[in-house]
Every structure is written in C-alpha cells, then in structure tokens.
Image (tube, rainbow, N blue to C red; front, side, top):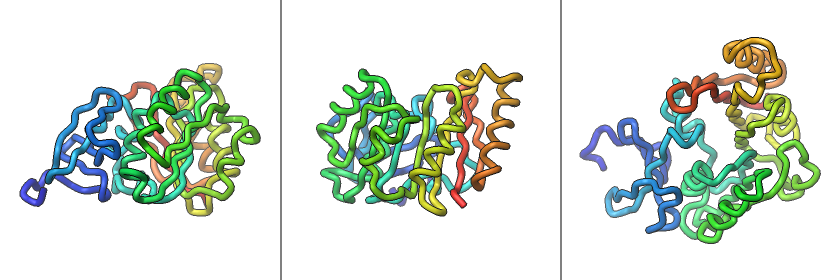
Length: 234
C-alpha cells in the first residue's frame, strides 16, 4: 500500500483509495450486498458504496478529517434506522472486526421486520452486531440494551420529526462530547413550509439550540434531498 500514494488509511480497517472506500472484511469471502471484494497486501477488503450509504457519502464529502466521522473500534455504538445492513456491515468491519477481535458492540435498531430479518442474517457471521426490532422514538422498549451512554450515535429514519427524534436520542444515549450524526431526508418533512433549503435551515436552528453543530454535509449527488448533520454533545 505504501507505493500507492492515493491510498489513505482512516483506521486499521478503513481505507480511502482516491474516491473509493474499502473496509477489511470481517466475514471473509462474503459480500453483503454484491459489493466488490479486493485484496490489499493479502487482506480482503469490501468496497463501501457511497451511493448506498449516507455515512459512506459523508466520508467523501466532509470538509474535515473523515476519520472523525467514525466511532472508535471496540466501543459501543447505536444506529437508529439500520435498514437492510449496507452501512451496518461496513461499520461492523471497522468497529468489531473478524470474530469481534476489537470487542465492539453495534446496536442496530429498525422498525421494519424485513430489515430485521436481513440484519439477523448478517449478525450470524458478525459477532458484536445486535439487531433490534423497535421504533426509534420508543426508547423504553429497547433502551435497556444500552445500559451506559455511547460516544457515537447515528440516525437514519424516514419519519416526520427527524430532528426531534434525534435530539431525544442524544439526550438519552449520547455521552458528553460524544459525536452524533443525523441523516435528514427532506421529503419526510413535507408537512413543513418551504423547500429543502428551508427544511435544512430549520434543522440547523433546532440542533444549534441544544448541541454543537460540527458540520452540515450536503449529500446531493449521492442521496438527493438528504443532508448529514454532525454534532457534538455539549
């Protein structure tokens, strides 16, 4: 890897190769959603497609050090709106590693039974991944799975009131100085007046009242009508 100056490690398990992102495959030989597999120095990596992952798109679009968007390997993190597992699988590569060698814990919450089936299948080969069927707004039903505060929280739910849901989760689960990432879908907030820019401006105002807004990342081109907000809890 040292001979290729375009390759930049973001962690021991995440590489940037130009505009491509690769993660060390924690379940060798298995592609989660048909992504490319490739070896770097004899170690199998999976391509992290930014067109199918808001976090992946954020890593490419951030104006700051992209490694700041990733949780610490071996920590416990919470992901609300886990979907079918594309981003979750790459987070697991970084957070837990093969056979959970880093001793991480990734609590992945989603409301859809079909998503939970996919996440449960994914977890079979990825210890440390904890799929949870639950509503992101109803912490009392599943919050017992997170007995202490986390240092990293991600939310990607397509429900009205996304900012309010996120701030509630920040208050309940995020530690002081912890990093939170909110993927906001403008189309889910159409009950509000104005276009996408007004919706994002309103989100900035609400977030800034309570947390430190580190960055607002426009995801247009990867995920239209989406923005990623990076915050730190005061």
